[in-house]
Length: 151
Image 1: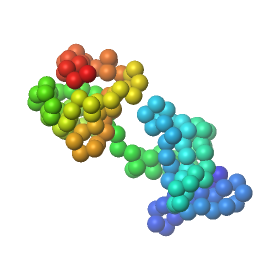
Image 2: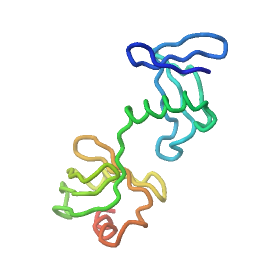
Image 3: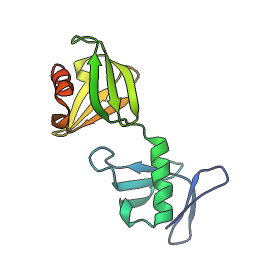
Image 4: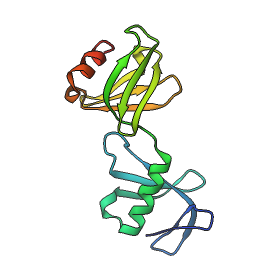
């Protein structure tokens, strides 16, 4: 498997058999639970053209292209601290510190906080932006206290 960019910046896959497939898009199978494994390369028609079990097993040049494409495609900030909430009733304005900086958003309802696993919460803001909270039990005391009011 060989992966390159064409003149338009799109990914081009050359298979072991020599087939060339334009406009390939990497898609994580389990983006939250297993972010560094199981990636499907999907062709322009939406069908899978290659499967990657572990990203670490891909040659470095191709891996870097896949990682770059995934960063452009995915936007899921991770909440590291809850700084304040405007009200414990919804809708409420949340001000948080994420891995991408400080931001504010509106939480429409408690149902917009979903438990994906014991250690991962997904928070959906009023504009559809998804935020993750990994290991909520490890948040600082103030953040846990605010979050607990909504769980």
